[in-house]
Image 1 (tube, helix red, strand yellow):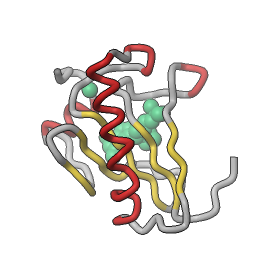
Image 2 (cartoon, protein in one colour):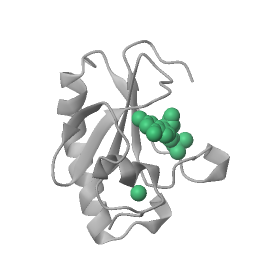
Image 3 (cartoon, helix red, strand yellow):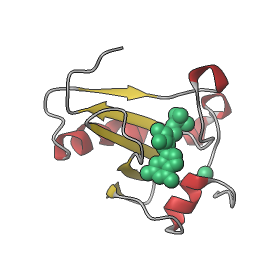
Image 4 (spheres, helix red, strand yellow):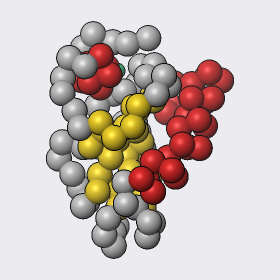
Length: 112
Ligand code: 5GP
Ligand code: ZN
């Protein structure tokens, strides 16, 4: 379920404002507060879990659902020329929010 100390759970509950671009019963997509590309969205599952390594069958179902939805959400947000999906896992990747999320980056030519 949701975690009281988690910033993304607070966003899901509406306790912290966010620029939402898509929401349904399973997922929320909102603009990253510090965009690393012209378009930088964050797709988060509504059930809190920290890491890719915490995956189980039910969570994987939600991630599959999110991956099915992301192309239409990307299109609605102007990402017609491509985009990049990123999941940061753990400290070496620089993960700062421990509620699994998929970065959606685009709106310009992306460099590595
Ligand atoms: P991570 O480094 O964990 O993969 O990514 C966390 C992302 O969440 C960062 O890109 C950061 O800018 C974003 N972020 C952190 N706090 C907030 C917030 O309160 N609101 C929004 N919209 N984005 C946030
Ligand atoms: Zn959370």
